[in-house]
Length: 80
View 1 (cartoon, rainbow, N blue to C red):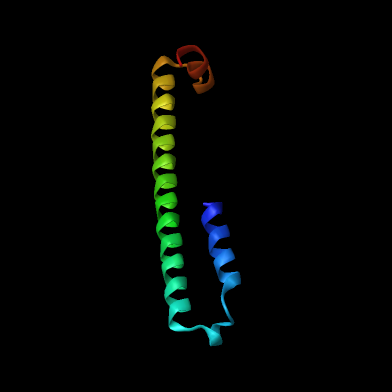
View 2: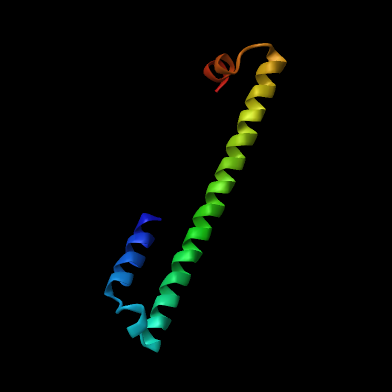
C-alpha cells in the first residue's frame, strides 16, 4: 500500500498549482486517485477478512481448550 501512496504523492508533486491545472492534468489526477482508492479498498477488504479468520480461529481454540479443560496456551503447544 505504501507504494501506491508514494506514487500518488509523486504525481501530486508534478502537478501545477490547482488553479493552473488543465483538463488533462485533472483527468490524470482523477485516474491516479481512482487507482489508489481501488487498491486501498482491496487492502482494507483483505485485512478485514484476515481479522475475521483470526477471530474465528481464536474462538475455535478457546472452545477446544475448554472442552479438554486445559488452558489455550497448553492446548496450542500440545495439539498444534
